[in-house]
Image (tube, rainbow, N blue to C red; front, side, top):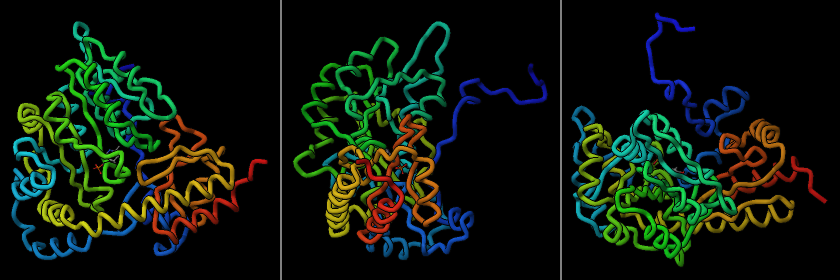
Length: 375
Ligand SMILES: *Cc1c(COP(=O)(O)O)cnc(C)c1O
């Protein structure tokens, strides 16, 4: 039945499911009658160290500039990024978080599938939900290629690319599973992808990669002009609340992204904080060290409880717990927020962010109490 009093939207908009973010601390406090200070959030892969001290100082210094619009071109931040990643400013696009970058790519390269012109985006099963939503909001078709060992099956993905494919999305490391692929696997994949198909490589967790797995993304973009690399300040750089991300792509692609970008998409405090965070090496090194140490503890505890998990190159671990909804609620009652991943088709799993050592231990203690050890 049609209702003529209702505004008309495309059916693909009505069938979108809003992104389920990690449960906020304030909401958990309200709902469970817990003091905010007693709650730990291990749900959104934020940096448990809090903001980098240099970023906080940078914000303090310019907090009075709020009456003015930010620099729409983010000149100073692009200069800083250019120095750090060895890339010219016209290869850089700034985003309101890297979710913004994902949306800009979708908007620039995808279109609603028409009767006479199909259009699809290829990604792996367990691909970041924000990307899936960005694709669906354009009306293009989403092609999800079954995962291999919870990670990307790059061979199958290359075979899935067809004449209607405009974008292939890869995440390295992947969220929510923490898997990664090597630069050799990546380049042999890129060698097989037609030059007119964009490969969007989401490197939100790049800084958590172990050193022997790292590679020069800028150099790859120079070699493969259809490659778009996406990075964020939300994870290892500790600025999730400020919303800054960026893309590295050829000037041709960068120009297209700039056409669909909101003029003032990155606010002035965020720009200043990002510049400071980029150069806070002590903070970044400590974030990496703390995370690697925490990940090893997660493996130990899961092994002892005989809980399956996926080895992670991110700052989180997915753990197969069985009845995830029940455990999720029991943890919440104890003031521990983790993340359900049932919307990724991982109904028996929970994703847990690596926190500070004392936060991790609190989670482990609760886990030991709540999980029946498999004999
Ligand atoms: C967290 C995350 C991002 C970053 O999102 P922002 O919008 O930059 O906060 C991007 N991609 C993946 C896969 C993520 O997990």
